[in-house]
Image 1 (spheres, rainbow, N blue to C red):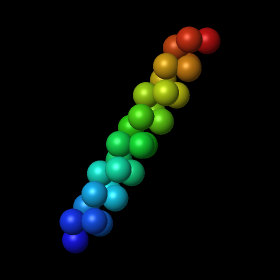
Image 2 (image 1 turned 120 degrees about the vertical axis):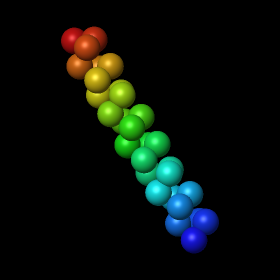
Image 3 (image 1 turned 60 degrees about the horizontal axis):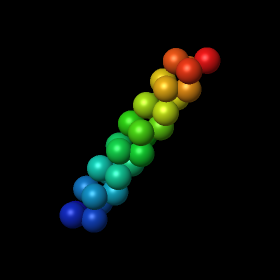
Length: 29
């Protein structure tokens, strides 16, 4: 159960980082 929760947190972190990167790139253009 702990490993599954860790994977969920990791996926959320990655997706939020990807979203921030997209916003940064969009603002840079």
